[in-house]
Amino acid sequence: MAKTIEEINKKIKDGNVVVLDAEEIIDYIEENGAKKAAKDVDIVTTATFGPMCSSGAFLNFGHSDPPIKMNKVWLNDVPAYSGLAAVDVYLGATELSESEGMNYGGAHVIEDLIQGKTIKLRATAHGTDCYPRKDIETYINKETINQAYLFNPRNVYQNYAVATNSSNKTIYTYMGKLLPRFGNATYSSAGQLNPLLNDPYYRTIGIGTKIFIGGAQGYIAWHGTQHNPNQHRIANGTTIGPGATLAVIGNIKEMSNNFIKAAIFPGYGVTMFMGIGIPIPVLDKEMIDFLKIKDEDIFTIIEDYSVQRRNKPTYGKVNYKQLRSGNIAINGKKVQTGSISSYAKAKSIAQYLANLIKEKKFFLTEPVSQLPQDEKFGNLEILSQEEI
Amino acid sequence: MAKRKLVLTFPEDIVTKPITYRLVKDYDLSFNILRAEVTPDMEGKILLELSGDIPKIEEGINYLQESGVTIQEAARDITVDKKECIHCGLCTSLCMTQSLTLDPETKKLLFDKDKCILCGLCSNSCPVDAIKLKM
Ligand code: SF4
Ligand code: SF4
Image (cartoon, rainbow over all chains, first blue to last red; front, side, top):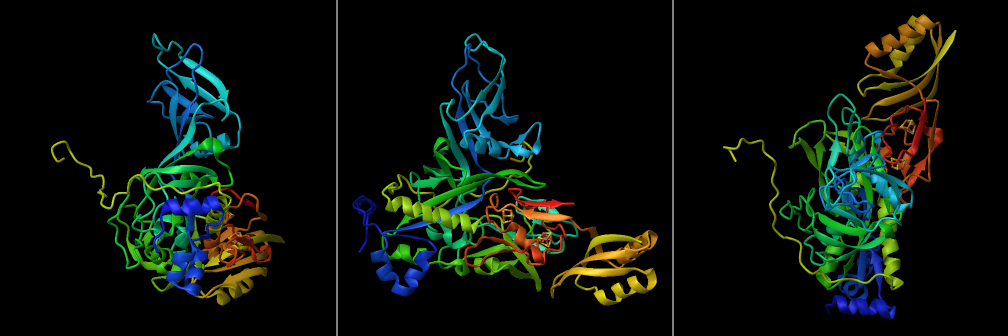
């Protein structure tokens, strides 16, 4: 019998909801069968904790006296974008400090804000009749400013590629340090815990879905950039390599550094580990067919990151069980593997979210609109005005 | 008499025995293999201490490099900050001696210092700077 989100929310309220995480549901289905699982289990929690470069924060500082229309803005020497109203800025996670370079960036400012630390704000302006001030230097923290929310244009990738290096030198990439001559291979997905791999056609995950983000309760705002529903899929619906993505939003003032963390990939730059949890309602047996996937059912492609081109040579497919075993074979050679996203952290977020639901602190929402099932996924070509 | 602690990396197609034998015979060096890790289908790594005359050590090192062995100074110490670590496992892909691994059950990082040969390959890799190598 099918369940509705309303019925599931009532169960949460009544204290008799059954919640498992996306790892626990695998065994439950194997032991009890799909039909019983669909009947018994109401919600499956999914999660991911990985570096997500396309993250950043909208901040509003409030007005100074006399006021200023900020033109150029720095937070702890990290530039923020202020081509908005007078005291609104967008601070990107990967923006680097002008004084410390790769040792500190936008993600660190966001982390400092979350921790309640003091941040130096500096801004310049051209000065107008309504905003006469031309420069300002002051200090802020998350209590002194008005709004501070993350708005991440692309998070929660549905699968990602494996990176390796065929060249003769060590390379430093956003997929980590890659040793020469296939010395190692890195990957980045929570696999069987990943939200979009457990709901591969976004039946329940949509715009307006309430999510757990960095310790706060936030929402899916839109489909993410480079959302690619037309990516090649296998029979269980999961994509081979990157497919759907999500744009997400959440209040920084409610976040905790347990679930979001600034990171530096040596030689590449600054990024942000985002912890995101998404509850999937078990509406019917069809959802169980999606939720039963395990690491060995999810495949991805091995790509050669030493080739500095958009299309990289590939070395075949592997599944996440092989990747998590610690080594895979590439061209007959045994290659050690490592993840750049944290399975242990993703698991703890899935459990944390399950507990929030059981404690009646987190209710589900019906999506207000579906994510696109068709979307252009194009490239940037270098063209003249005549060619376009 | 001088002493140098080095990490030698042997590509998979080089056989270690004759090379180390020549170090002793032709360069009059004595060596002490502190740790070694040679895995089939992969590169071999040896942490050793060379002792002998300084010019002979230099010659020996040149000979090794010409034979295709990569040489680096061993680090003095390594620490892994368990509080900072987020258990991604990135470093485990770089560690050939399996001193850095993820626990198959908890998926959390395990560090077995006894297996570490101080090769330094895991340096410059941790996204949260939890691994510190002293050179
Ligand atoms: S230095 Fe790092 S990579 Fe090398 S053996 Fe020790 S732990 Fe492993
Ligand atoms: S790379 Fe750093 S954070 Fe990741 S498991 Fe190793 S020590 Fe921990």
